Amino acid sequence: MVDNVNNNSSPLKDLYWTPEESAEAAKPEDARLGQEDFFKLLTQQLSMQDPSKPVENDQMIAQMTSFTMAEGITGLSEEFKDFAESMTSNQALQASSLVGRQVLIPSDVGHFDGSKPVEGMVATEQTTQNTTLRIENEAGQVVRTIDMGTLPAGQHRYSWDGLDDSGEAVPAGDYKIAANGRVGGSSEDLMALTYANVESVSTGGQRGIVLNLESIGRIDFKDVIQITNGNG
Image 1 (cartoon, one colour):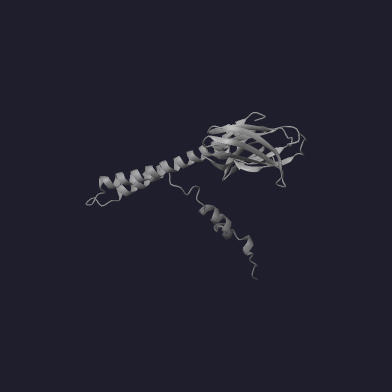
Image 2 (image 1 turned 120 degrees about the vertical axis):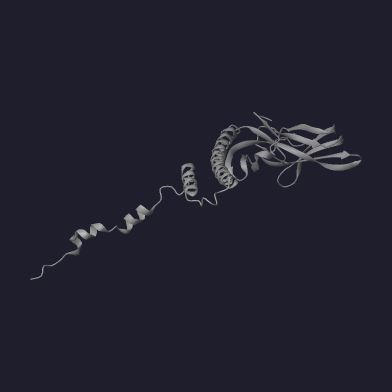
């Protein structure tokens, strides 16, 4: 009579590794070579070298220098990463303080909220005569003309109270600010700068710090000319 043999119960199966165990055993703990590994390899190289043809000193120095440089670059890369993360955190903290404040930007659009005046600057590169500031509504109609007279080179502040030429209040909304003056006998358009309210701030993108301004939209922080606490 022949006994049935159950291979599943055979103790021989314990002599074999499962695929999972093989993969786990073959997995390296750390694929990177450290300083200790390098010197072990260097010592092994020296012990197995041909006595009649020993390794030249300059070759050994070159190997050690290369390893030191590689290790230094790796450390520097990690330190730079930490520094960049720290800078990003500091930028986010500083940018958050801009919310609720006003910034002066190169824009010809001013937002009138129905009560607070629209304020900004007119920039001139040289003395400008008969300087005028025109306020236009969204339909392109001039609602107010302000005479600023003769202006020397520089930035000159303006303030519009939200009234038209007849003294009536205009509705809240966005208005275009256009400046013009005579320079050297010819009429020239001038750059208008406007104060805008910062509603929120975005950080972490390729553009760096981006300000989200009321009515105007997004603008890079690097384009900001001036920061104020409140009303311009």
